[in-house]
Length: 191
Image (tube, rainbow, N blue to C red):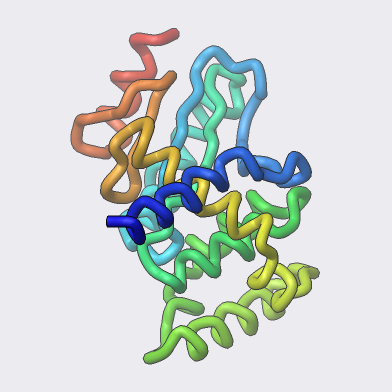
C-alpha cells in the first residue's frame, strides 16, 4: 500500500512541475467558441484513422473558419507511443507538423520486435522527413516526459479517458460513435 501511495504522490506531484516553455499542440483560432480536445496515442491505428479521415474535414469546416480549435493531447498506450509523443512535443514550432507526419506514416516507423528497434525506426523516420531535432535529447528530456505523462493523468482524472482516441468538446466527453457525421451534429449544436 505504501508503494502505491508513493507512486500516486510522484505521479500527481508532477502536475505542478510542467514547464511553461512546452506548448500544447493546437490547430485553430485560440479564441474559437468551440474547443475540441483529442486524447490520442501515436501507435493507435484508430487515432491514425482519425487524422486521415476526420481531422481534415473538421479542419476545413470548423478549424479553418475559426469556429473551433483542436488540442491534441497525449495518452500513450505503450512505450513506443510515449517516445513518439516526446518527439512530437519536442519542438513547439514544428509539433503539429511532426504529429501529423507520424500519424500519416504510422506504418513506416511503428515496427520492430523491441523498443530499441522501434526507436531506431522512429529516429530514421524523423531524419528522413527532415525534422531538425536532437532525437536523443528529446527522448530523454524529463520536462517533456512529465508534460506527456501529465496529459495522460489529466485525461484519466478529469474525463475518465481509457481508450484512444477520446474526444472532449467544450469540456464534455463525446460519447457517440466516432465519425464525422456524429461529430458534426454535436458541433452544430454549439454554433
